Image (cartoon, rainbow, N blue to C red; front, side):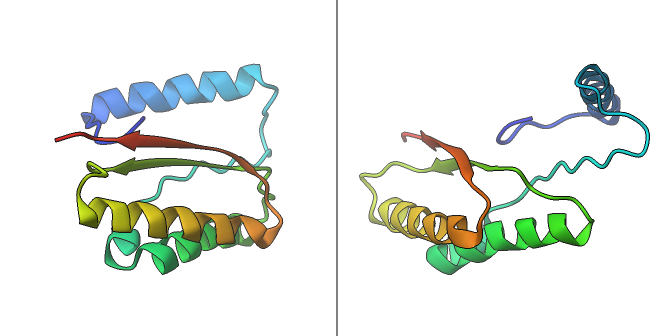
Length: 118
């Protein structure tokens, strides 16, 4: 699932079922722990640097708290037009905050950035 997609309950259950089959095909079995997270960007819209840094850190903390061990972080970011001052401010703060959060020993797998024009 990505971005602003909306699903009915049935569509969501179909996606969950697909994910279950994919995990089984990877050898994940009963008793294995799997962590799937989704996060929002609200804190980053209020304070971009701190919101991004603590957002990623909080997710990693939650994974450890469940007894799992994160293997990598992948960020997917969306911003408005960088010609607008507010969008540039958010972009610069979030990118800096995420780079600080990567210092916690969990490697960054990559970052996807989408700039939504107009």
